[in-house]
Amino acid sequence: TAMILGYIIPFFIAIGNLKEENRTLIKFAALTALIGLYLAKDVWLKIPQMLSLS
Image 1: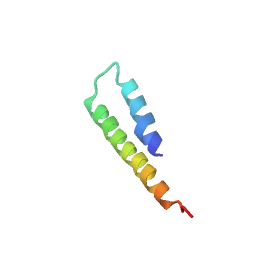
Image 2: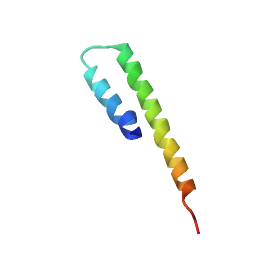
Image 3: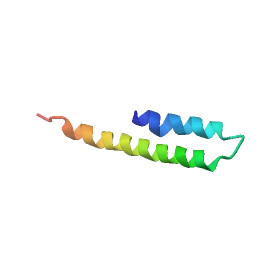
Image 4: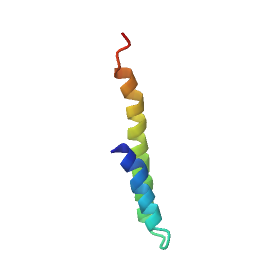
């Protein structure tokens, strides 16, 4: 879900706003990108720490 929220949804919102400039949707796309990137980086940090080395 983090990849969808961070990359795919903002991409389609930005593509949809090429013809008309709706600042509210651009801000929403930026917010979803930040949330998605935070979730993705959070998972990248937590999962390797959960693996047992022995």
